[in-house]
Image (cartoon, rainbow, N blue to C red; front, side):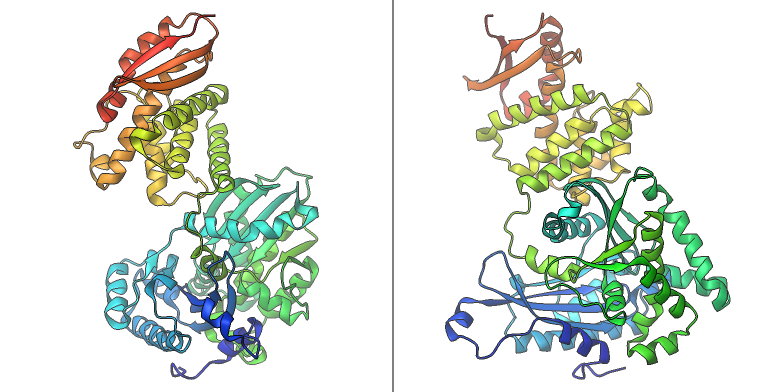
Length: 544
């Protein structure tokens, strides 16, 4: 084991790949810049990226370090991180803290420490996080798959937009990690699928070890597992239609270096699938020790290299791709950039969340004409009540997504379908939403009818106060929007809302028929909004 102050071989390799500071350095430039750092506790290694920024939306990477620590091997075989592994983890993090001091990067606001599936899935994760904090002062943040998908999309989006061959094409973006494979499927710039698959390189490697298969059979065993896992993904891409495949991850960058292919500094680099196939065939017949010696890499990378290459190779083959597209982009780069964004809820990002919600609505055969109309009415009500609730674009997007999905439960049955909606939303993938936001969408949809949110409802009671307020307010707005299209025939085509004398006046400016049923339904459905906002609700119809 290397001492913390001794750079190991892979540290040196990564440092040479990273952009370095140019000399001489302008003193005024130093004065106006500040350092940033991201540390990632991954499944097979702990990685750190250090950069600098002047506060704009760009970060210049100064150095990247990687130290092998097999957190995932413990979690995926024993269910918890062992004491010895935790000690190694603390040792590496202490060495990283010293490195951060060299760069004068000590402001906690400019340092982000994240952990992925290896720590997140460990049964003793809280003990691990506490031990790290006590020993190093680092507060480690567990990031979920939705966060990883979000930052991945934000990172690769400019690359896809700059490649004219992908402008309107189906594109699969995948990163084979140690624990999971994160997948995005895009049609042009729109996300149509976002999901993590339990297909990590370390999981595959451990599966082969547990099966006690010979080396000659190891490759076929892994390929069989890969094919079974990604079968639902392949069904998303229409047969006969060409699809691009962007393969992220350090293993693919390693493959490019071995094959003598230089990665573009900004953009995507093509690698023929047949070249990856030849490389994989050579490596699968080699022992881990031989791979370490030949390519001068650590045990943690050598163990997972073949499974990762095979997973990417099979995805490309199943998608009928002739080339894989590789980039130097990684999760730490995306997280560094994200530290400079005060608000990730841009219009484009919100559109992708809504697009994902629409795909889910289609899956459960929702009446999209009705759902879209309810969502549009809910959005207008939300904006009309802005002075009362003072909620932001995040809450507006959660409301819109819940409105699109409020009738998904009808896929199961009519009786108690609002509860079925909650279950289906909670157990489906929605791009861009972290665990809390995902739950809020499900609960807003669940409370669009019948009982109002109550402290006696267990899932509602477990929310923090701010989240309970959000659910109550947005569910109240959604109930009014649903009432306004009670018949599903869009009789209320357009509305203008004002607040007059403690009443929300909903003025129908363009109706398509008698609104008696809508008025009656509104009287029954408006109580939650009235109680939450302290406003009565009045429906008016402009004379024709």
